[in-house]
Length: 106
Image 1 (spheres, rainbow, N blue to C red):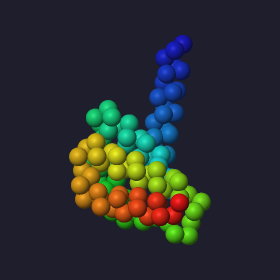
Image 2: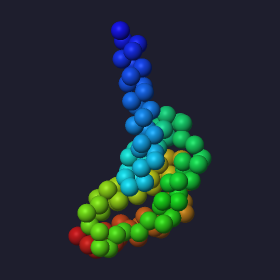
Image 3: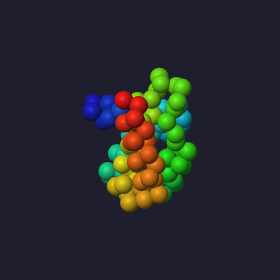
Image 4: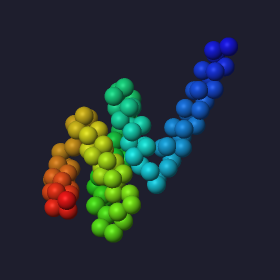
């Protein structure tokens, strides 16, 4: 009886992972997934590249405050993943600039 239930859970998990990795509106979900993959040493180079691309183009939204928290957490989580994988060097200055800008807005 447990096997069908586990099969259902695995199928649901795979379905959720597919949705999370395709959803570009909420990158935070994808980065959470990448964080867990990184912790299990299963993060791939192309996924690290996606994080680097996001961090490269990220700027604090000046007029859309609705998703500001989610955007900042996504940036910080991506930066943390890159720190753990030793790929954060080119984003240190950007992280400091965003921190400084956020401190100035409070």
